[in-house]
Image (cartoon, rainbow, N blue to C red; front, top):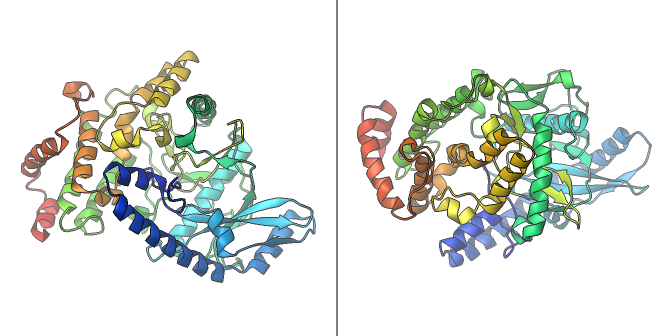
Length: 464
């Protein structure tokens, strides 16, 4: 699910997607207060992280890994880290005496951070994913020189980290790009998606190095395997309270994830007493979708082939030069393999955000261009993945903890967008915009009757 992590144009320290939604619904005054609090919290997180990092040991390790006996330095001041920070990670330049520059990546700390073993698993998966891309594909991604988990006894740096190549480029600002610049990006992304298709997998899950691969070691192809999903919210939902997966089919995987989230809603981990029933109903609807609609049209064999899919493709994961040539794809944490329908749907940076939140399933011009590029190349199957992409995008959007963060109006419109995307009587087409709240209330009343005997729903309603 896309997460609001990119920077806002008006408030550079705050998430762009959240601001765009806030302004759309007229909450500017609340946004200013939120932005100020966000900046203060960010400063505290950076100060805490700086205190935990042993910069001397990190530099010693970097020089050792490089193997050229070249000393290096790193500036870990909060101001420096803040200049290269996203919502979950921050970065600092590792500058060698001969002018070579690497990048150090650290996970930010917060009171709601997942347990160490979860963070370490996500880091292992991110490192393995970048190593796979660098060694086996033509996707421009940073080369990994070294990495270490926080719980690794041999890690003397104090925190988990990745030392990687620093690519020369700036994060793509999709909103400010011109039509011509966007078109150039779309065509390059189409080529990269075709490259991803050349490297299929037979499991749904995340890439992780085998136990034989420890921090700092470069994994071979045989030592990188599809294992459980490297996601925070569902990490304890698998076998032996570990990550769920890997799965043999996307139907099996998504059903397991929806059921896991239903359990968390019933257990009070997702939602509040006021909205838990609504969130539960929206998730329960997805189970019917998985059974009744989503894969009925699939041809035999397509549901057991998977492809790598970036987990946070809002645009700032793409580095470009001044000519809008893509020089790198970064931020591979939470990455997993995905079904063909999901992997080749349009990245969320292309979605018309305000319209999407209003329940519209109309595609943006750039999404239509992506489909056209595939068609022109003789790939009608991939073009169809783009044109039908709203189904899987709606299914996955606001799945899990994010579902309870919306106001009632937004929640209703997002749900109606989901329902309309799978409404077979309309052929997946959308009615004229308007009346989403009323449609939601009518559907909700029927759903409460339909699932009135479900034990989880009964318990939730009793607590309300």
